[in-house]
Image 1 (cartoon, helix red, strand yellow):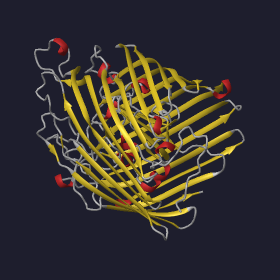
Image 2 (cartoon, one colour; image 1 turned 45 degrees about the vertical axis):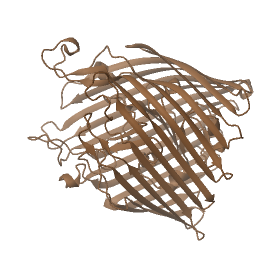
Image 3 (cartoon, rainbow, N blue to C red; image 1 turned 90 degrees about the vertical axis):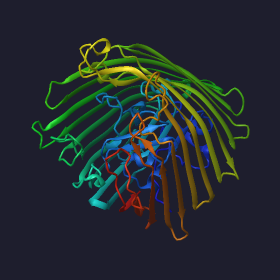
Image 4 (cartoon, helix red, strand yellow; image 1 turned 60 degrees about the vertical axis):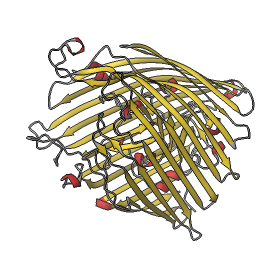
Length: 633
């Protein structure tokens, strides 16, 4: 039997199995409160602790890429710059959270989050919310929200650890321990990952040297119960990575093997005071969250060795209240004040600095007017100290006529993305920029058959985005928006549409066997008026993706699994002339429990040694094998 991790029953995010028991699954991201999945009118995917352990993945993106509507691109091996697209949206149009704190980097030109430095480590739960979600999650939530949760404190002593070794001297060790001491509950962990890696420049295109990656991460959570109704939450997360990236050396200034590398250090802290009033019907939380991201590129062979340096900091104060007005009506409301700051410099030049503040308020109502029907509606207003105000709205409904065997869902939601500090205040900045905005619609059905053994989901969606911010090159004469901008600037010049269908299936005919499949057909197009690329596919957005996962536990205790992933062809340029070929990946995994607390694991990634690229000219790993041991107490 698989060793299981002991988790606190009071965990804010219930770590439940992503199984055919959809009505038992509780999610938080969709409404910012605990809600049964069968009562949520939006598309949510859940990856629980058991699934994470079974997949044996090192990078979080390896877990995400097999979910509906998600594609991943990476500039080389593990650790290099990595983007995640939800339903064809830009990577920086996705809100990424870890333990409730936004990870988006204020110093990045697009303000997004680089998934390259994000390893599974002690992450125990993942929720992916698809569609525009700015009513609850604010700026950047145009494509969706990815919410990551590390291991929670436990009442009793719980410890887990894993160690792994494999291809190209890849080694990892991760551990976590948790326990309750009187009124204090704690969970603390750390991990280190190292690999010699592959050449960032594809070996098929001349890359020979290995661009390694090393990462150290740590996580901590403390809950202090001041009384039966008042508590303090303290959370922290840290990641420090270094990865070889290759560069563009003279005289050709073309991608080539170099000794250049990138360092990324990320720090997250969170402190909250929680109070339950009115016999628990009125939940309150006052919190402050802080993120600090340092990035630098170093080229030991360059005249100026530090080729890039950037720091982004974000401080957020927030209040959230949840009130049970009646048994059939609940309200969630809150206010936030966020201050972002950045500094960046290239090749030793003078630094560029900027800062901005955005204040927000939101209200959401959840009603159950009749049995089987859950309706949700909300609105938000954000006030930015540069571009002014933005109001967004959302509404959704979930209806089951037969106690969860059939669930019909529909939703409308709006999203926006504030111009980044770099787009506003850098040497290319434009202080007249408006926020990007989007409207999303979706409708779907979940059908369970044969008791709890078979589940099928189908969702149709569409998102229209406008006022998208692109870089505009400037040429003489420098007039209009190009005045005093000889090298270019940013402007709201683009529109885009993404629409498609997501299908998923889960079959569990017997307890020992599970089969899961996901299919996404996406049409993501440039809809910019009068643009020469109007109607063309957006860059690096494959139309078709498919994955299938089969897991079986043999009578003698061996667990085996196989994952097949197909990613269709895409284009690397707006003109759709540079093609990125489709590819197929097959991964194998196995695990065997030696005792109730010790398990041996092994896996082979890219079994067929597929030669592929997600970004042209950047290599991806070939066939690789790993073995490890997992301990859980």
